[in-house]
Amino acid sequence: MTTTTRRLVATAAAAACLFGLGTGVASAQLPDFGSSGGVPTTSETDPVVLVDSFGGIGKGRLVKQIMSSPAVSQGGTIKFRVMVQYVAGSNTRVELVRDAVPAALQLVKVERPVDGALGTSMKTIEANAYEQTTYNGIDYTTVSWKEGGFLGMFQDNPEITPGHPVFVDFTYKVPADMATGEHKHGAEARINTLINPEVKNGTGAQPFTVSEATRPFGS
Image (cartoon, rainbow, N blue to C red; front, side, top):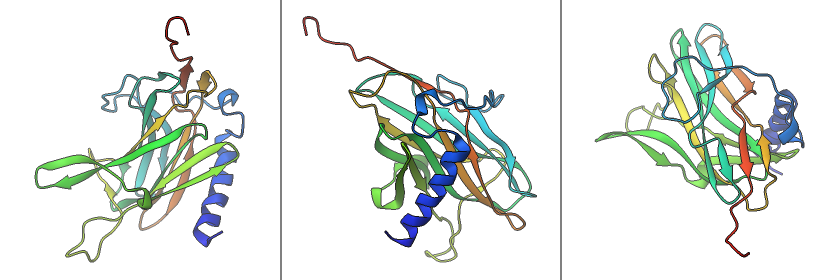
């Protein structure tokens, strides 16, 4: 096992304790953090603030949102967004974003916004650009990147500023045999400021519900 993998497993273990997810994800009792209150969204569900503020002087807010319907059938897909929003301060950079979902879900793709000549668009991240770890029935997908700089030098982690959050979208396939009912999920982020780097784990996201797939007539 590599040093990186060991570190991710250890982090995942700690996160599992903080999330309260464990192996019984569908029945875990997680705190209700309520609605984020006015965060722009195109989802059928409101974004949920998992951590209201962290990071010392430069502050961020950890938000998770279901970008597709929260009700999905076996064999369907579901899409989540993990976002770090600006709260206060300056020079606040996001070192990593991590999604936490039941291990039964199958990761299809990971996307993040990328600036280009024609504006900002969503780009699918290559599999070698993110880390996946499974611990105690939970899958953790970790994304971290650097940008900016000059001629490929002096790049840094993305900065959150007013009106410009940092976010990553995660799309999963729901297996045909996944347990029906309500399922919990969470997220994690690390932000680094000049004063106080900090990692926060978040729970209480809008649960998603898996229903039995429609069977062809006569089957």
